[in-house]
Image (cartoon, rainbow, N blue to C red; front, side):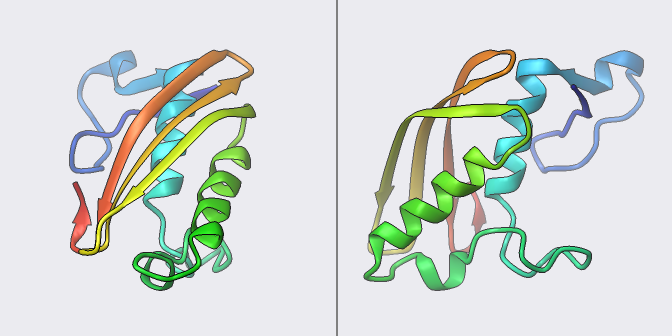
Length: 120
């Protein structure tokens, strides 16, 4: 699996040849992060993709939030299992997600943060 690398702002990295691409485990990790950053209905060719962040953050249905996050992670290409998921939410609608997944390339994990004003 190969994907183009993204910089800290989420833009494609260019000008470094083969170093502009992530492979295997790093590619899966980046795909998970990209999918978690997606808003429901934001993709014009797949309006069902993404998480309904506006309605789920700060809502009373924590289970729906955790299911949306775990479903997004598990439905990422080459992810074979979700080993650990921790979701911490603040009253100001900021969320921290810690996860570990099993992939076809090995195990990986990350800490992902999101707030109502954008990605932290």
